[in-house]
Amino acid sequence: MVKKYGLWYAVKYYKLIQLFITAIVLYIAQPYVFLLLCNLTQITERYMFYKLFYYTSYLIVIVAWFLISFATLRSQRYKYLTSGRSYGKDSGKYNRTYTELVEYFSDADPYKMDTEALPNIPWKQAEGMILGKAKNGHLFNVNSGKDGKNYFIFGLPSSGKTAGPIICSCLRWGMHRPLSPHNKKTDGSVFCIDLKNDIWKATHKYRAIKRFTLMNPGKSCHFNPLAGIEKLSIDERCNFIENIGFNIIPDTGGGDGRYFRETAEDFWNGIALYLIDKSECKISFPDIIKEILAGNAVDWVKKVVADGSEESQRRLASKWGENEKNLSGGYSLLAQSCRKFASDKLFYLLGNDPQYEYISVQTLEDGYDVYVQLDQAEIANYAALLSMIVQSFLNGFINRENNPKAGRLKDGTLRPICFMLDEFAQLSTLKYESIATAFMTLRSRNISIVCALQSRSSIAEMFHSENACASLIDCVTTFCFLSIQEVATRKWASDLIGTHKVLKISNNLSDGSNGNKNQGRSVSEAREPIIFPADFGNLKDDSKGIDELIIYSQGKYLRADKQYYFK
Image (tube, rainbow, N blue to C red):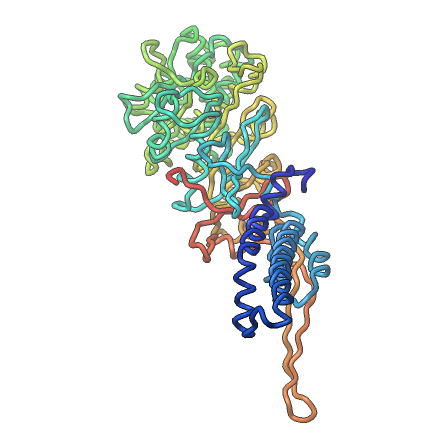
């Protein structure tokens, strides 16, 4: 322990200072012990055993201190060797010797996190991701560091995801000093989806934040989906437009649905590339939406084939002479998808007028946080918009290392950036290939991705693939479980954390030959889940009345108390 934690830690852990104080108190109490002995036995100075009682009182004090010290040191040593277990409880419960219990429990729970190694500091003095507080008061946090990490936070609505890990982490990401409304400079930036405005209310006094908010367009920054397209090569421009199309047009399943989706994507790519080329990259995203909603399938095919660029013709030339009913079905899907962007509010916020302030990747690089806000009740209507914004930012960081304008710290490392994606499963049109690439590659660009969701199955439903779900989970370094109701996710979380050794007690009652009852008690070794699946439904420390969460990080687990930002 001394080599691992230092001498002072060992002194505090084994309560040596308290034992020293106890020795002083017992030494002071020795005369009173002697008087007590004399009073109890009615012995005075005239008796020959008077001096013997005097020395006996010293012996009693020494033995008492030795027994107290022995019990304390043994209990603390047992606690250290068995990862926090209580010797008194285990000894009384299993009726085994100290040596037997240590030998058994020292490796019974190898996946339990060493909480003594965690920092013993208040969360408002920590930096990075703030996830919870161990039972010994130490904090579990992950510093932003030089490499990004991926996190999954599972919890039902009102389980404390926002008030706990999300807001605490948004406040302390890149923050190496106490919170102050007079100094909002940080060494890290946060991109955050804020569906209820709660996160912004709790953080805007202490951090420099640029907001894209549908709830108050007049005070919102703008977002240009086509920003920077004029700087791209032809091939890059085509990929750029295709990615936007994936976000706009929802997945319609297989069969005829797949045909209509692919047709809709062809129309989007062909028309958008045509209009961008004709405007010399000056057209805005709302203008493209207006053109699509004002046209029809046949006229656009004729127009692009007759006067379009080679790239736009590649998307629509094959539609010439095709069944008009089939074309109309695909174009109708595109128009239906585009109508979600056809509002005065979005036309105002998604344009390219240079007089307004815009959020972009560079906003984060310049040291600001970016919050995307909308009413939670409207998330289904704006899922495509959210997906488009998120994918635009994630794709913008792929070449971050080669970006001369990338934010860097004093030591030259890339500025840590956290993507806080609340209600991740609602980003239903997010392209799987894009999010998978982000999970696998952006860590080396010092980008951390935090996804808050309700269950594992929602990821599989989101990407229509269990393999896609497993692939993303394989890239996650830390899981945080606040509550789970879905049965399959409970079972998966329990299996993820693993099992440990336990001693099971069996009591037997049988009839003896003389008519008496014979009672037997046996203790056997077994393995059982560290966290039973049903336990994820109500994580709470009943003895203290405190809400709990389970943290699983790099092969170790921790049952911790929730840390709320208002505490």
